[in-house]
Image (tube, rainbow, N blue to C red; front, side, top):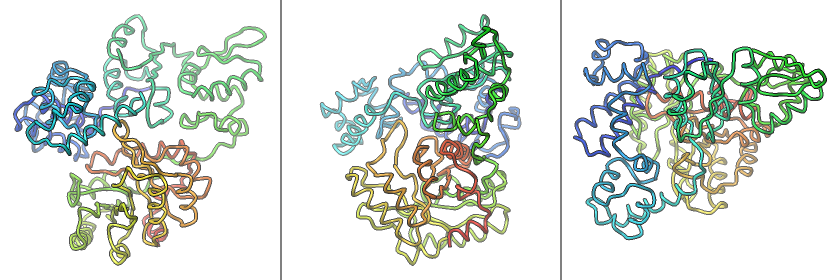
Length: 544
C-alpha cells in the first residue's frame, strides 16, 4: 500500500481549478490567465514538478514566486491554502454547476452575480423564466443549450467520475501514512464511475478516524481499519463486487472455511486463519491470484481454480498512442511537444489525429511535411493521421483521396447526437465500410457526468467491426472511458481489435493511457487484442 504520488497532472489540475474559481468569483482576467498559463506549463513538463524547490520552479516560464510556493504546497498536501479559501467562499452547489453542459466559469459568474443562481433548481427556474437571454452575451440559443444541459445533468447517475474520486483521495493521502493504505472497491477494479470510495488502512484508527471522517464527509467514502496481519482478506472483501464475493465465499465454504474481512474461519473448529496479502488468500484456497479488474463474477473464479486465467494486457505492453490533438485543431500542444512526450514515455510512435472539421486539406498537407521534419529529431515517430467526422448524413469529413494518404484514420461522431438509434448506428456502420477508416473513435460519444451516450446499437457495431476488420477505440480520457468493459469483452470475443488512445489535447494527458489499459483489462484483453501493442512496423502493416 502506498500514498498517491503527486503527479504533474495533479498539480496542473489544482492550478486550472484555481483559474476556474477565480473566473467564477469575477477576479482580474490577468490573474486567471496566470494560473491557466502555469497549469499548461506544468502539464508540458516531463520532469516531476513535485520534486523541485521554489527556486527551480521559478525558472520555468510562466511560474512566479507566488505560484511556485503554491506548487510546493500542492506537493506536500495535495492542495494549497488560497485555493481552499476561495473554494470555501464560493457555494459548493454553484461550483457543481460547472458540470452542466453550456455553463462555464464566466457564465457562472454572471448567473451568480446578476441572477442570484446558486443551485441547479435556481438555474432551471431562470431558464424557464427566460431570464438568461437578458444577460450580456446571452440569447435564446445559449439559453436553449443550457436547458438541454440541465436535462442531461439530471439524468446522470449519482456516481463519481474517477477524477472526482481522485480529488477526494488526494485529501485522504495527506492524512494517511505512506505505505499504510490501499484504495479498494470499484475504483480499484477500474470501473469508469465510482459509487463509493473504499479505503483499507492499517493506520491507527484512534488517531485518524475523526480526521478522515471530516475529509470524506459527504463524499460516499468508507474507510476500513485493519491490522497488517489481516490485511489480505480485508482488502479482498473491500475490492470485489458483490457477485464475486458471494461466489468466492461459496468456494471457501466448499473447502471448509467461511470468508470474512478478518480472515478465513474454519467451519468446524472456528479457528481464524489470517493473511497479510490477497495472494496468500488465493493460494490458501488453491487458486491463482485474480487481478482486481476481473473481480466481477464473470467466470474468473472458475478459471483461477484451474489456474487458467487470461494473460492480461499491461501498460508496459503499449508501444504508442493512437489519438492525439495539436494546436492545428483544438489541442494545446505542438508537434514538438508531442514528440518529446513520446520520447519521455519510451513510445515508438504517436499518431497525430487533429479534427477534420478544423484542418483544411491544405493545412493537413503542411502538417504532414512538418511531421517528417519533427521525426528527424526524435526517437518517437509521429504518424500523420486524422480524427475524421462522421457527419450527420453519414459522409466523412475528408474525401477518400485525402484519407488514402494518411498513416491512420479515426472516424468519430461529433454531431447529430439527437438522431434516433438506427440513424446513428447506420452512420457508424457506413464509416466502417470505408477502406481507409481504421478505428471508430469514442463509440458512444459519452462525456461522463456531462453528456449521456448517443443512441447507438453497439452489438450491431461490434458485429460489423468484426466483418470489416475495423478497430474500436477504448478512449482513455477520464471524462469519456468509452467503450464500457462489457462491450470490450464482446468485441474481443468476436475477434475485433481494440485501440487504446488518450485523445490527448495536452502533454500531461498522455498519462491517461493507464485508463484505457485498465478498461482493456476489465474486458479480459490480452496484448494481442490491442492495436497499439504492435511495433511501428506492425502497426503500419496492420493498417495496410
